[in-house]
Image 1 (tube, rainbow, N blue to C red):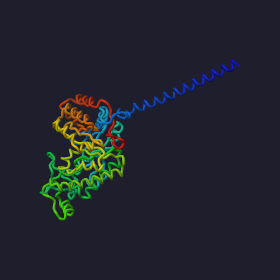
Image 2 (cartoon, rainbow, N blue to C red):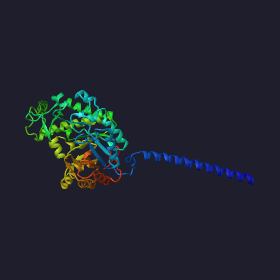
Image 3 (spheres, rainbow, N blue to C red):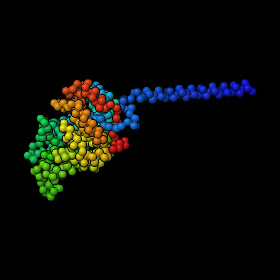
Image 4 (cartoon, rainbow, N blue to C red):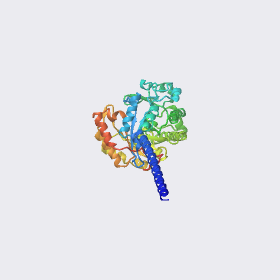
Length: 414
């Protein structure tokens, strides 16, 4: 009997040991798989639920920059942004009267489906950014940079002259620096349909996280004196013509309200097409946007038409910069949507020192804004009096740890 009991005990112990061994190897296998997956992900994808959120964005444009014009260069640039703990890119998709992606809508209206720049041919630049950007853990929000604006000599202006609006003297030309610009009439139904079709084409065909507009989604207040708009104003004002003063309060209010109505229509169309596509707006401060661009973003925000606000405050004077952060409409928006600050990192002929950039970032952080975005990629470290290594080291210091994109749709809270 003792021999039998001893044999049973030894058998039981052996079985328990075997089971423990199997469990140990199973656990190790699972942990190994998890580690492999984690290591294969980009750094920003490894953020935890406790990782703080902060917008760290940059605008990518085809003006004074070649980042979009070559596939490998674009890929390396996105990888570098991820390495430096940026988390969002705003690539331009509508500039100079052309789309920067292959567009059936543009082909039909303009006569050309893609910007003719050689570096964009045979490619879908936007698809590359979405694919590689998401691989690197970046949020991708295409930027509708030119809005209703186009070069005066563009195919769009030549093919659709009836779509253009004009000044009170009959001229259609508005100077932007050294460039002659014209503006599509945002009050004409066919213009609105064209712009909306371009927007929805992007929303429908690309796995984007959002889409962004700025003041060019409005109209310079000196415009609107074309026959169509004047007739529409008279119809709604008992035959009274608009004021010859472009800054007349009722004339400004009427045009701004029409643009607001279109913004509301576009917002609803975007949400009907892809509900989780964020609507982002990157305007100038409210007083300038409303009075000079007829873009009443304060009203858009109050109406719930903005899900991310990136306020452009391109100021060298630190006191003026801080003052712009304190206006009531900014604080009101900040209470319930992510409000970030656009900071100028430099222009082609205007270098901004890194110390100024870092100081402005800190002022934004001190006031608990949702984050910052820089205009523009090329000036982060290429168009600068400081060396590339100095600039990148400074950004690495500024964004020392990864941060989550402050996404209103996925539960961001102020």
